[in-house]
Length: 196
Image (tube, rainbow, N blue to C red; front, side, top):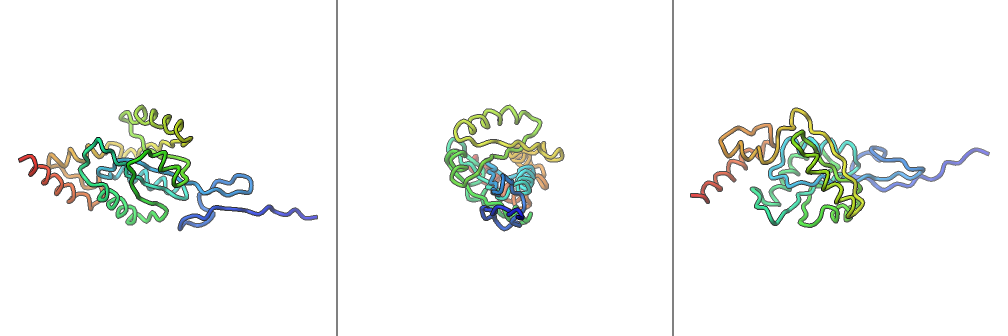
């Protein structure tokens, strides 16, 4: 008697091909969802690199602008979300969703069914800072954290460096999406006006 293959069940994916980036566990295909959280104030070329690389590994990636009431960002929550969406559309990332939250990232992960948080690491001490948060997230919700090393060409770029360079008249072209360059100039002009 010939062997009969067991039925294959799967969770529907986004716009990617059905077989791509799935984990096979027995006869069950499981969709993998990741979350890339950050303040993204503004989003940088380094952030986009980590997000785009994540989009190749996971069926679905949620980029989450984390809103911290204790901080005063340069750009509004909606502006940050919009800029990231535009940059990722331009890059052709069809399996990425961009949103924001003012709650715990682990709560957001549970809400969307994500099993992993992805964080980019630079050589400037990011690991020590991120490790504690990764352990807390695992304890709170059983969510694992995947650390992706930054591209060596981009690892010197951070949102704070971008703002500092722009504040002192430096050219940030290539460090941020093109649409951010004039937005930074406008935001800094408003900042100077408020100080005067």
